[in-house]
Length: 511
Image (cartoon, rainbow, N blue to C red; front, side):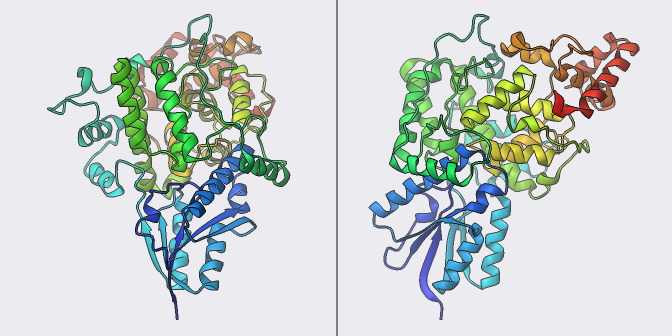
């Protein structure tokens, strides 16, 4: 006879007391179940800071549940997978009804559904309410469309949720997108004084977790010395309030800029809190809109930030569930090269890669241009196996959960799905990095040299990529100008570029 008790599974990225999982919770018969699985930290070689963030946030959330008198079974440090631990709990307690919010990983979603079927129990998998757009709404939007593009989805979301539109549904400021105003580099003398984000000294729970991670995962990449991430709801709210009060004003214009020893720039550093569900995107957008009016902030800054939350974040989640599981295997260009070993230790002579990866190893963080146009750009140009690159991104960033990481990496950075939702490969030579950063000034490689010992490997590989895929690039008005520049390079020099690129590609670990 099955127990009438319902088990409510709460995963490590679903830490919201008001979330869907706990709706209509029966304190007499229901029980919350949470699992710290060693397996989850090891199926990709996770950054120590990522492991620590999840564990600390989970333990803080469990403490909040206990304070509110929720019955909870919390399993620490088990060698079992989440699903195996769940199976053991369901069988031991003879539970016939399981409630959970849809996981942010296709793999785990499928495993839970399979387990419920295997044990013949009732499974109530609820849709995650931390998003503006439901799965069905996204599917409805895609129906009949030959091209799936962010811009048109974003406009729909603005209108549907009445955000930055007037009474007639027209965009504030007369245009939907101010992206062209959001791409400036820092001044030549550098960014100047930047208000640092709020950083949180580890409390007793976090200190205990840090010690545990150092002891249990000593060979995993990254450092814990700079760990200052928000780990509970109160800290996440404080981080949000500080951002809109002091840092939002300069976010827009410099959101693509890079500079050495400037790990955060003017970015919000809220993605980990959003993805753990410590913050709801609705309250983030509301806070930004309030600050816009209160401080008369530039509309391009406000729109640029909201586009990331209401537009791109919602869009890639929709694409993830629409295209899985195929998205994880996509390899449009047939790239097969191994990920260079220096992606894991930052020991490369390329200054831009050394800084972006070194920062990532120290903090578990890099902003979107460092991810897209430095580490991602190189991985595409170097013909690295997409699944290996995706595993690296999932492992190395504290805010990486597969629903958001995989579309960004495979779909945008690597063009692995052949332009399913992007109109072109996002590639650039060393000249772009020189324009947007100060990296090149301290580098032994020269961004304007196309081949030879002093040539920037990114520049060489960029031109090699255009030569190799010239037909594809010439077929699209979005990329035709890039290959037009090949006409300015003699056939002899193109031959030298290809020969030098072959050398680079054969010895990627030596860069």
